[in-house]
Length: 271
Ligand code: SF4
Ligand code: SF4
Ligand code: FES
Image (cartoon, rainbow, N blue to C red; front, side, top):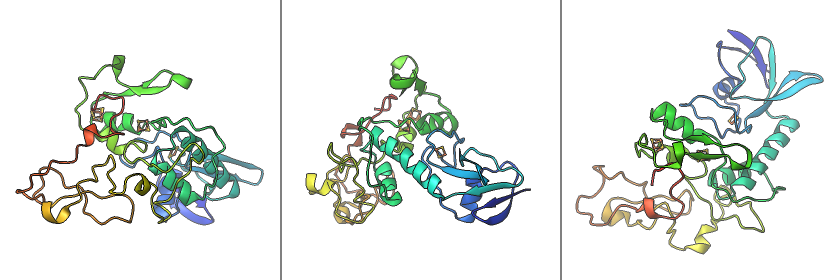
């Protein structure tokens, strides 16, 4: 066991644990983005920063990759930590303002401004899709290519990969693809309305919630299946998988046409 102090709590952690493992065990909340329990930790987004050390010898480290060490002192929510996380989140939102995952994080963390010029990209380079494809799907169909401004996620030689199993796991885990937010605009890139329990701005754009997630199929009572919006303002069941026994056999309605909906599809050949 390795003895550490985290937010004033003395704790004996298992060898090989990370600071994030300990924090999660103790119920100390640390925001994460590029981390997923089922995948290897990468340490790319820096949103999970915590402060280690004492006195003047303190520094910020990524909690998802930093292993516990004997006598380590950790603080998860100092002003320095919160300011650093907000700065990271500002950069991420400027990169991809349409990510609902990021917008909800911004609302939760009380972010009230984004000082960086929005780029309106579709990817924040968290690497989750790449690790998901390799580690859980055993496919290695996608990966990072290029550096700097030209960095992107793509298939080998930029062509549809024969290794791709069309499982959709990369899209499922992507914080930029899975949920889109219509709230941000060039004047204000922060939305956060869903998280704050306000009327989502997407309702102004489409009053039947006819968004890319297939929410036009909301006639749950007659069809036995439907869709749910992440907003709390709509009542419907979750999308029922096509082969589910819950789906009415008499239903003649097609399943949500997600593949042809705007917002679907990344550069990995999943279309
Ligand atoms: S859809 Fe293709 S690229 Fe995406 S995780 Fe599955 S195998 Fe990998
Ligand atoms: S496509 Fe999505 S999951 Fe993959 S690196 Fe970009 S933001 Fe992350
Ligand atoms: S969650 Fe730790 S660096 Fe991204």
